[in-house]
Length: 345
Ligand code: KG4
Ligand code: ZN
Image (cartoon, rainbow, N blue to C red):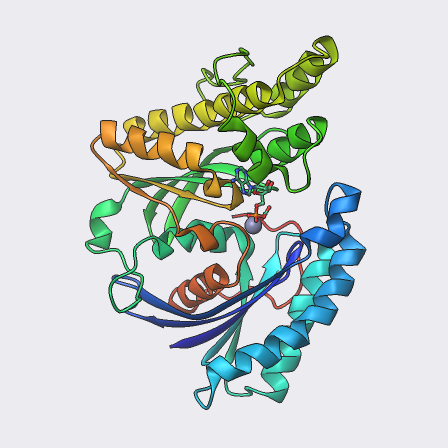
């Protein structure tokens, strides 16, 4: 099936064309086009995303990207139009939802319109980890990777899930305060780095000593699977207040290690408790190579598999919305085509 997907939940306007086959037992994906128009430069002076600027930019970018993507579609029209309906910034979400309805009505009246949960997009994006020589993504022996422990980490969410199949999962825990990506962004701001902070922290951490400062690992040893990153962020703030001559690379490295270790410890414990056959990592923070490295080593130690999406499918993109749209179609799960800023997984 051919899927046109649309993502506007935050500050990336994204459109993709995904060719999906194989059903729930052995899905395969070819990403024919994956366009992302980032608004980072516009939000940067504000140190974060401004919802009304995001909305305005999505409205400008959507028709431009659509004209571009029509070249990929050619004469073969999409069977499905998939659009992110939430969670995200409500004004931003509405632009994609409105555009999807318009496009379906005017250009692809026969297509099925599917509302996608953005977090399902991140969750399913592990299916975009391995590409064969025909440029097709698939996981061989898919059944054998379940149960899996999924670590879904973005700017708005931090979750640990037990995934039993492509249509069944259970949330084990989540953050009680800041999302891990949010903590990266806020600490980066304290260090005087640009928005978004994650990539900047990673860059500086490579130059620093991760053992230089012993930051706390909140809830790391708690019995549940919840996280808390606000205390860690605050201890960086106090450290910087008390050490005017702090080495920012050491701070970045020590903070990153504290965050990564906390995530990895709980993922490891969950993998052991549930006899997981694999660890799945996704969401914007999954672009962090230290986190990828530590989790893939944990998986190796546990003699289980590790999957994380190819680099371009970690931070927000529409290809993952196409993948989740295909899954929703197969599972006959269609959400209302209406923006809902607060839907959960
Ligand atoms: O998934 P995403 O693009 O948007 C949301 O759904 O929130 O995630 C964005 C988050 C931001 O907080 C950004 O700082 C973080 O992902 N991020 C990173 C890296 N690249 C992006 N965090 C740590 N290391 C990175 N390399
Ligand atoms: Zn996201």
